[in-house]
Image 1 (spheres, rainbow, N blue to C red):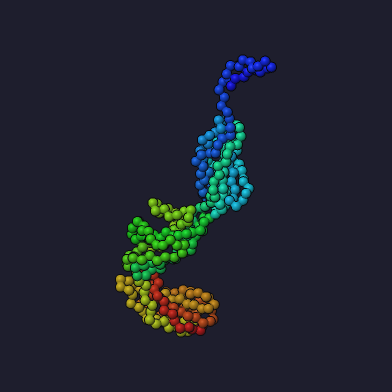
Image 2 (cartoon, helix red, strand yellow):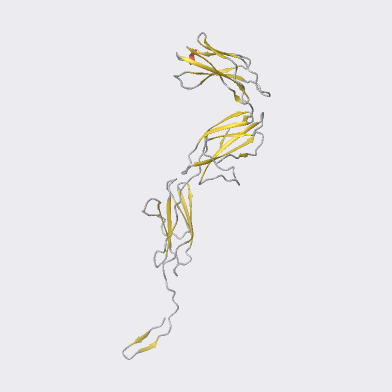
Length: 319
């Protein structure tokens, strides 16, 4: 710059030029702005503005709000020129918007604002995993876990031979149904099964499928269930109820380990285990100490290494 005086006669001589001066302005929007969801938190990252307005960036201001609310909340992080920050104490499953702006000596720059972002965590492990086996197959059922803020949308099922360490993924349809049947298994071999939930935020990772919270079964031998005994007759006998049955011939390659006897009454509302009988036995006395006065139905099934076989239900008996 240079200066010249002006009077009624005219313009005077100009001064010598000043030193060079850079005009200052507020900063432009930050670059590479990103928001990453976490468990009850959001991690915000960015790069300095491409245009700092000609002045050093002295601070970044961060604000957030629920997507449904118009009220922005300022994150209290003091004066800070770090290029990332974590917003804590948020609610999983709720959408938030986040914005960041740079501050220089001139003032506050332009905002960079995110779209809706939802804090989430990975789904928990399924619970109450039950495996029921039959010839060449295993039927699994379980209780769905919490999704970590979003619904569970699928399950990953895997199995392996108990003698090996390599898991095999069962390719079934995408479904949130907490049950599945794995086929093509070999009778007489022992398998282990596991299941894991996925969500839209935590989908199946085909590169590293072993990560996550799995529900893992006990080892199970694959094979046909034992047939139900042909006859199951119950009668009141002394201080109890006597159940008799015909012993079965087990499936080829399997042996009967025991016979399981259960009883049912309307008062109980569910089957109760009365006891197990020796594989050579064909009767069991249900001790009256277990029973209240009333009408009972009994049932019996052979147990092999596969598990409990098919039940035969008796006649009703009043005790």
